Image 1: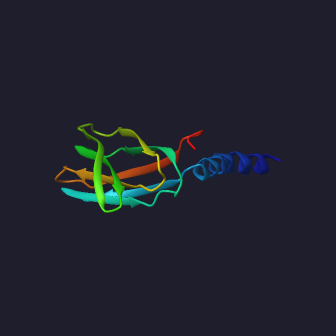
Image 2: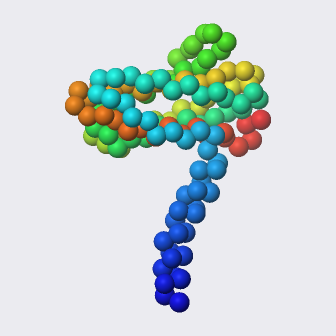
Image 3: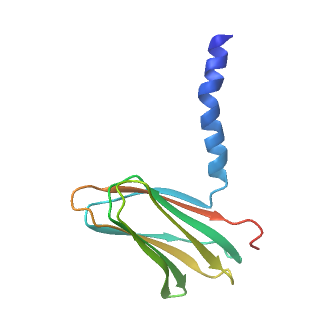
Length: 130
C-alpha cells in the first residue's frame, strides 16, 4: 500500500502541471545569449480576443522585454520594460487583437555580458474576450 501511495504522491504534481499547460495558447522556454537579442513570432488565432503575455526569468539581468503588434507588414511597439533584477524578472502585458488579424512579436534583450538568460514566454487567452 505504501509504494502505491508514494507513486501517487510523486505523480500528482506532474499531472496538475500538465493540466495547467493545456490552458496556454503558447508556452516557450527560450535562451538568450550574452549581449544578444531574440525575437519570437506568435501566429495569433484569426478571431478577436484579449491575451495575457507573461515573461518570467530567474536569470541575472539586465533584461529588456518588448511586446510588438504585427499588422500586415507593419510592426508597432505596445509595451517595453527593462529589468535590472538578479533573478525574479517578471513582465506582464495585455495584447488586444480586436479584429483578429494581428500577430504578436516578443523581443528579449540580454544585456548581461557573461551569462545567458533563460526566459519563459507564456501567452494565455483571457476569458470572455470574444
